[in-house]
Length: 302
Image 1: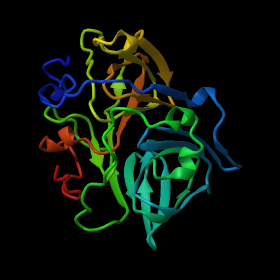
Image 2 (image 1 turned 45 degrees about the vertical axis):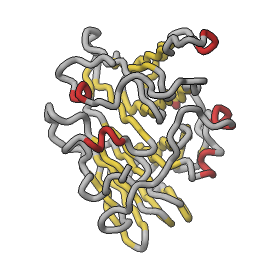
Image 3 (image 1 turned 180 degrees about the horizontal axis):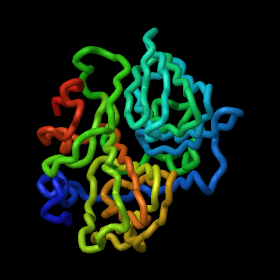
Image 4 (image 1 turned 90 degrees about the vertical axis):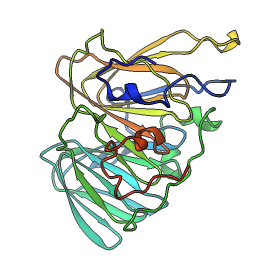
């Protein structure tokens, strides 16, 4: 792996060569919402849907008064509210919670409704158990066969105080010892990276691989180049050409397990990326202080 010395990930022992031979690779996908029609459209909502093996992302443009409903949701899901001026109202489990802009929320299983007080954009991240959403995903054909080399999606222990709506401000101090702004639920983890002024210093790239899970990279603003390289193993039939995909915001890139990758911000303004993992990453969770809500969600016993 290649990280500069100041990158907190440089001390992660989990990032390294595969411990098991790779017999096949999953397929990357890129959903550029700004180039395509939404999968869900009404007078108050335009939503784009894209998935990984274990997660599904819904990016929505909503107008004032819009209502986003989920009935009988099997698991928790994340709500991302990047607009600092936004104001939303969530009802779940009979409890109404105000959700301000510039925040992240976790909503509990069951029935829930999110109402927007003004025009804004939001993104929701579900597990792939939300079968009605995976059926709409723009890249659904890729997952007609399960992606290879992935760990099963198994729920971590129950939150210490049970299920409820949880709201977290994005106003989190950036400290050198911690990587990004990371929150987890029982089955999902997001890393809401700090805004990245561009372009990126090409002398400080960070190519690395992940074993056992895909990475979803949700670009909310700016532009990124997702650089992918397939390792040359002994089986030349698995070799592929390098990929350098340009994705502006809003978009979602899904990066397969075992593929060497790094994302390079190239917009001259602010570039904003949110990384998505399912299940939660054990290596991030093992680092003291990295997961901001670790006191609410116990770690897996594995």
